[in-house]
Length: 258
Image (cartoon, rainbow, N blue to C red; front, side):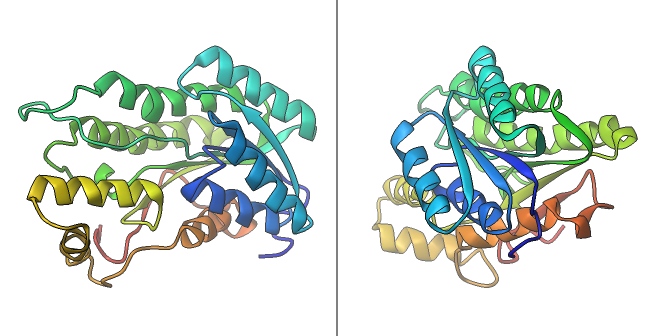
């Protein structure tokens, strides 16, 4: 991975934890300056310090992607600190249940605000700084490929990220900027663990049984490691992927095969 992004400047939203933390670390190890943006200060500090400890360059900015003014100011500050911007990774997101026909919490606005509005606000801000040959990678989900009862808001938002990516790719093609989406399956993060705990509660069973049930739907029978998602994002940001745009790529152990 070393040197593939030498001299490049990247923004990663939700860059302090989970998949975003892994993406930030992988891009930093590949030589990019990385600006981490997130709502929580402490994880950003820890992740930025870890990148620097490995010889990388990292910056941190606290902002809520769902707040247009906050994220625009943070992206502008990141571009100013790094002297420009080449890569945007829209990773920030929230999960959890939200049914429509089913009883449960109404989190529609909360989830769409972060997972879809946040992608739009961040991308619009970043594109003022990204020049010819830049990259936009947005993290969707396998739930952007199919539906799950009780998760209408999350599924809608992640389907929306894919549609956004396809339209954006066409808008940016004249500038030779690529736009792609990554659709992780079950990935070994706190969010995934919380999801499995929710399944266990709904099924009236143990966490271990819920985990076995979830992974039974994955042909490879295991969770994806966050660093594996980071490696795919690195490829999409590298020169080797300069001809790939408008794609939604599933990294899910075979859970989705289209």
